[in-house]
Image (cartoon, rainbow over all chains, first blue to last red):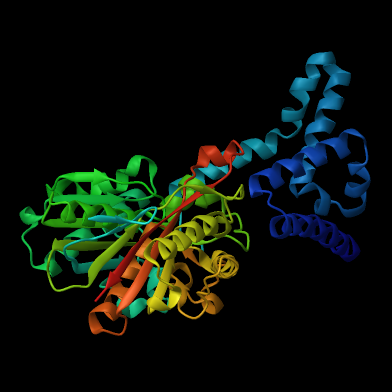
Length: 122
Length: 334
């Protein structure tokens, strides 16, 4: 097991979450806006090819947070354009992220069948 | 009823608060005011399928309890004024429909409880009623779902956010009686502080509380020391501090005999509710239990109760509108 890789993933993934926490505590941005901002930022950095350096460095530490989802959308769109032309810009993003989207819907549905929403602890 | 000053009304005869009732949820039960609630419930759903149905049950049971405690037959109640935070006040209308009492749904956000008592006592003093029921409720889960985010999202609450209280409170007002008496009414104006942050309601409502407080003192010629206690509901920690500062700047120092129902209902250290409690049910249940008990026992003889509301909904917040506030005040004397 590559312990150094695990450490890098922890540090990068953790740093992304720290940015989110600071935005919650120090700004008036709602959680929904912060999430959208993370996806958008990931898409821009992915489209410019910058996010790939972060993935090469930290693996899941960069792909699992929401910025990784944004990166996947833009990377998928760019590569599909190469295969199918202009229409690929609309196909590629969702195609690349399809496993994540479909499993979120599927497991979300399963969770709604077997559990009940609860009050927050704090 | 006689108008004094700009917007304060003095009740000519006597209007008594014959009885009150309050029922609260599990988090409120764990708080410092636990022993003052008539009843507490350990499950937010209270055996119902949805939070909205549970909230209706809170207001129904609380209203029935207040009537029972008053000893009056239900059919002798002339009017019911009730409200809550849920769209179109359906919590109150669904919860109270089987009471068979002529009903007015009232919306004043978290100021609703004092608004209902203000309207009820005017009805009695104006000769339109003998006995009036006032009731209010709020529920953390139904309010969070409607005003903020789905609970399933599990997002964090910012430090300035207040915790919507899961509780209901009710009062039965009668003509004459032996007190505690509602003596003066100061209905509030809408005041917009320009705050847009739905997670900082205390700051949004503090200006309205100040306006009503200062107007009440100017109209009546009273100063803060006329009252044993001044209570607001529910500015929370942030709004309470703002109101103390603003009222001092206006020449009224309330720091010695002032507290806020949203501050009183939870323990800041152990319950981590950030800026304290809020919701129509907060001031309603704190008044119905803790404050009313002290009036009955004579520990408090004169109080000013100011309930503050944030006149907002999920849509206006999403569209970037400001959050106007309102505050209604009634003075109660033994």
